[in-house]
Image (cartoon, rainbow, N blue to C red; front, side):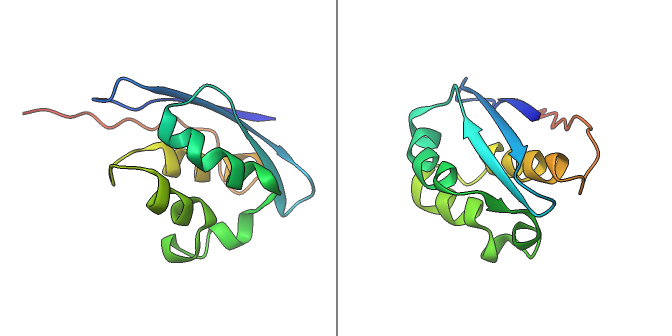
Length: 105
């Protein structure tokens, strides 16, 4: 089982989620602690396993990004990208590596 913890930044929210492979193509996502906006995505994304290969076809085809486009108020929220990496990792399509965005002004 793969797990992510996202500290999103200026909003101060933390999102936790896990993914568990159903087979070599599909993974079931469970979203735990999250903000009210990711909570809105939860029902759709947890309803059925996500197709890891379909997610990799691009942002426009992504069930995660489609849901984010409707539910999230800010386009730069890192949670959708983190959810993608979570599914990829669980299905063996990515390696475990932390991502850092350092913001300076």
